[in-house]
Length: 218
Image (cartoon, rainbow, N blue to C red):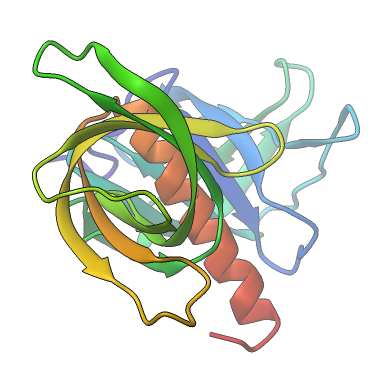
């Protein structure tokens, strides 16, 4: 395997710049060579962000198997060539298996509907609120009587502009204390979910964890 496996040309990546706490920047891979990488230069407010040689950056990317992250140093930046950055060999490469999904305690709105074995809707949709979520499923609270093994389609609203759809099954159904806000707690495991949809959840969790670390809450 090469240094940058399993990166591919045109693959989306995320760049984090050392010392820059404003945000994380979306980019993509332009050229891959044995000992360096050319990526699209990060931009802020329509302008390229200047990166001096030896600036430390962190690159994160995913495939169907894992999430990869590594640090590297900027070799040079070329504004004339459509704004590209050349970075050197990876430092401190980390690989996170997708099956080891990180779980985040977070209350988010969810819309659910029962489906049959042909994935046709049964009955009316109902609302719930997540207790936690991961790339593999959610725990949600609701007032609807459900049962283990039922198949549902879930739409999870990560923020005002982003939602995720998944079909899964109930693997745990708990009746809560009478004074609890929700009558039931439900464990919901994803069975059918596109990788792009799962990536939205994983990225959301990582970003939430970053914010918690900044606030010293994690």
